[in-house]
Image (cartoon, rainbow, N blue to C red; front, side, top):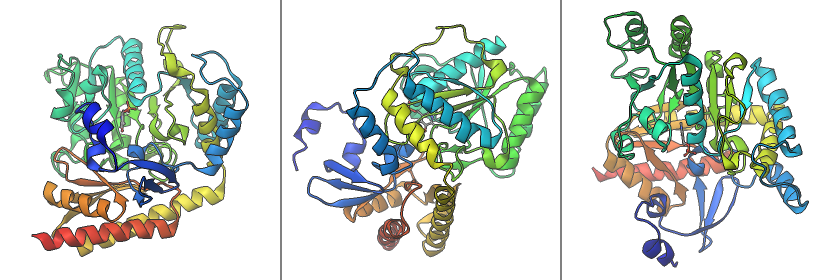
Amino acid sequence: MNTDAFDVHESNVRRYGRSFPTVFTRAIGATIWDETGKPYIDFLVGSGALNYGHNHPKILGPAVEYLAGKNILLSLDMNTAAKRDFIEVFVELILKPRSLSYKIQFPGPTGTNANEAALALARKYTGRSSVMAFTNAFHGMSLGSLAVSGSASTREIGGVARHDVVRVPFDSYPNQTFDSAGYIDFVLGDPGSGTEKPAAIILETIQAEGGMNTASASWLSEIQRICRKHDVVLIIDDIQAGAGRTGDFFSFEFAEIEPDIVCLSKSLSGSGNPLSIVLIRPEMDVWQPGEHSGTFRGNNLAFVTAGAMCNMWSDRQFTSGVERTAVNLQRHLDRLVEKFPKCIEQKRGRGLMAGLKCRSEAIFAHAHDVAFENGLLIEASGPNRDVIKILPPITIAEDELDHGIGILDHALTGAANDD
Ligand SMILES: *Cc1c(COP(=O)(O)O)cnc(C)c1O
């Protein structure tokens, strides 16, 4: 297989191309093939950007038709029929059934574009400059998002100062007994804390890149209570955990909270096409016309596939299938935790957003390599890169899930016998 183009010409920055040293060509559902025709089960799914698998027929069908019809592809933020259709179906099938009411901002198409817009809006709305962000958070690669991210290696990338961020402990950080919400409530109320009142608190309900750290429902509703009490904007970065990943459309539904601002991207288009939105509590929509912009706000092909994705959520068969798959996955992972106590410390995550915390980075590395060899793609997260991210498509068929888990079981068997 010829990888010269990458090895010789692509920047040293490339990562997944090294992690999976092959050349991929085709993909359907949970399976991705390389140039030699070897299939792999995909438990990475574009880091959560392909929750509906590769080339889902119900999502791709309308896109193919749209492309063939000489329709608008790029439209800045002009009105287009495709955009109107998306807004209507998103409001009708996603927001209304959940009793949510938001204005929709279309920023640039990446996740970090959404977070930057959310942070800017919260700062404008409150007139305050600092933001509270959590240990092990990951919010993206542009400066504002880097500033609120937690990992040392991520934060150092920008090469400039990252101001106006107050770091606070996430749920169960540094340990189960520490009351991080109580701590936040206290410092916000204490004039001697040295902590100025922030514009916003930004958080992921499950910190994917940070190691699949999972906030409890009670912690989330406590954070919402604290935000309301102190008049601070609550921003949920649902870029990776949202759009169906946890089994619900939004990752915060289980906690019955109603964030002030929600950022969605990654799987929002359902197809791997870049698309982001910022959901804004209507009274916080204090943007002036044209005040925030971005060339690729009008990715109409992504509107079409996103609309098709939203339609799937009105299908009971689809939603109960996702629920069943989440239960199956959790059952599989409980069994692996029990079977490999020497390798695995803990199961993490919720629904179909799962992780296995390995006892060392070496165990992860071994499992990763053997899994790849045998046709399974997995990647690491966490500050020590020792948490296996397990993100099968939420539409994965039962036999494909069993097959992927079987390969993982085999890979962990090897890692267990190694030490
Ligand atoms: C991926 C991710 C981002 C950044 O999205 P990009 O599209 O890479 O800019 C932000 N927040 C979370 C939680 C993510 O997983």
